Length: 184
Image 1 (cartoon, one colour):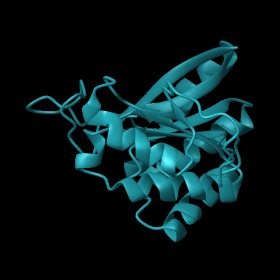
Image 2 (tube, rainbow, N blue to C red):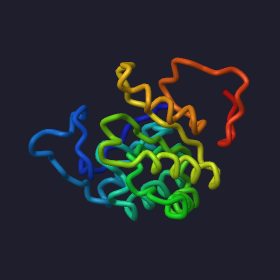
Image 3 (cartoon, rainbow, N blue to C red):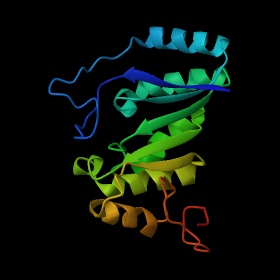
Image 4 (cartoon, helix red, strand yellow):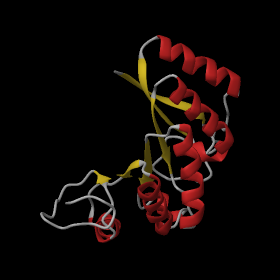
């Protein structure tokens, strides 16, 4: 199956020091929704079976995202959304948004997490998004951006202490059950 990353917009609500999109004057453009749908239809005909909505922050254009994910479902395309989770400031809000995405066919949510992201987005948002995924039956994982320095240890401990699925995961604690539906 062919898979692609789809950058619908370059706009992001945070500015992380490590991000290639965090230049002095970020280019915050958005594709026209009709054009994006046509590109997705063309990709389907070309054999693309998986699309990861990424680039800027996809949740900024949430209504458009719902339409794009729904189109992918209609075309039998696996969908993933990559997010910084700024929108998940409560479990209730997380479940509401994720419920709508699930109805449209979202397959997986990937949450970006790092000492850079968390300068702008509270860690609790990651936990709310992960718990919302579990409650709504959406696969998830946390993409832990790390250079494996000691500076990142507290961030890794947060993920482990809350039993979140994440990558990279250099250490595995055998036999520990977690409250989010997975054994480590």
